Length: 255
Image 1 (spheres, rainbow, N blue to C red):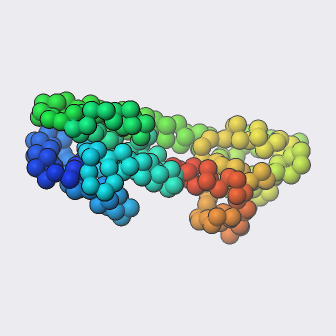
Image 2: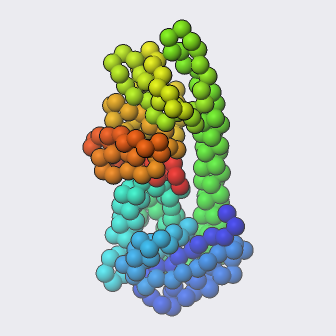
């Protein structure tokens, strides 16, 4: 990442300004934004602002720092994005010593007690940036593995013929009794192979939206709560029991 985004959320202006001043002196290229309440921070995040590291107070007027983190967690869950495991990384900077258990229940990265020195904050910032780099590398490695699998030929038997077909050319697979129908490149191929076997064999680019359909998310152009719209013009049913998991998987796929 070329540039990081740091956020400081504290209802004490003097504390916000001091932390921001220290962050500006750090060796990282960073955009820094201040917030005087959890509500203001959440409004910005809802508008599309995504900080990488958040320095968050606990005792604030309105929503406290623990409630704010819980709301952030709900947004991650609802939109399906991992935000790189637990993005933003939350570092509590607080004068309250007995909320550490609550902080780690909302997956905080760390907990600093006021008064905090510049050296303490710089050390903590370095740890957090190192963690972001590790998560980025992990994300890239996983994505590269998925890409390699996605272009790998899949060998299927239809009748007496063995056919090599790349995963990226498969639109979806349909369950049909003891066999499956592979829809790919304008063809519908009957294969004596059960759907769960395809699920085990195919990568994260595919998701089972219904007991009858395993879809290639690359070929989804849109969806509603009950249907997936494929780029060949077909519409497939999404099970109500699969919808929430599908949205999470799809958002992770396109992010």
